[in-house]
Each structure stands twice: as structure tokens, then as C-alpha cells.
Image 1 (cartoon, rainbow, N blue to C red):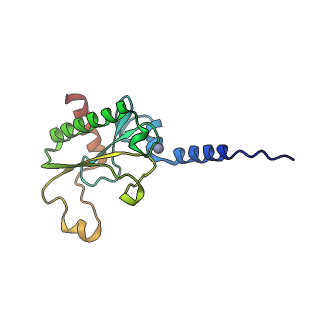
Image 2 (cartoon, rainbow, N blue to C red):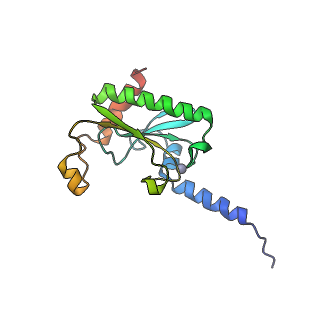
Image 3 (cartoon, rainbow, N blue to C red):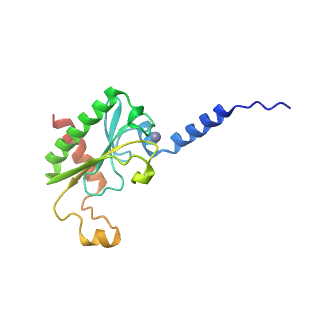
Length: 162
Ligand SMILES: [Zn+2]
């Protein structure tokens, strides 16, 4: 019996499996709605609520492509990313009236990325005193609103706000 040496095939299979197991790739495939938490689809990226929000309204901007580097995105996709981030800040300002924002990416697991293989930008509304001593001591996050309510508010505002 002959064995054909096909290392590229293994790479292909592993890459494929990694994409299937990726929460962002799964979200990109599923139908939008409250369970999926996807509330907007652009040309190259989509907007999704964080299932484990740091504060109410914590959302992410995610490319459809399963890529880990900014250089893997086209220039157009990077421009669209910043346009979506700017709109996310407008929408969250409208809905939650936060006093500030954290906007950023953790590139690589050493930098704290939860899903390191699929890059994503976090947009987190902040209020003075939202990091209470409870969360500092125990890691508990104080989120006063359910994801279902956040989804309805954000989706409505995304359609309404320019
Ligand atoms: Zn992915």
C-alpha cells in the first residue's frame, strides 16, 4: 500500500477544524438574532455583543475572515473597521450615555486575547466607578442589564443613529 505524503492536506484539515471551533466563525454563519448576538453585518465585518460583557453594551467588531493579523485584512476592511468602531461609539453614546470608552484589540493570547486566532476590536462603554471593589477583589463583573435587553436597545439604535 502506498502512502502519499500530503503535509499541506493536514494543514488544511487543522485550519478547517480551527475555524469550525471558532466562536466568531460560528456566529458569522448563524442567523442574526438575540441568541447569536450579531446585530449588524457590513461588507467585511460584523458587529456582535460580547457574551461575557465587561459593562452593559460591551460589543465587538469582527471580520468575516478567520485571520489573526491586521495585515491579513485588506486596506478597505481596515477602513471599514474604524468606521464601524466610530458608529459603535455613537450608538453606545446614544443608548447608555457613558462617560468614556475603552476601544482596543488584544493581538495574540499573550496580550490577553480570548480568541487569538480571529482578531476583533472591543468597544466598552465606561462610567466612573464601574470598576467596583467587588470586581477588583473577586473578578466579578457587575452588569445590571440582561443581554436580551442590550441586544434590543443596540439593534434599534444601530438602525436609527447615522
Ligand atoms: Zn474564526
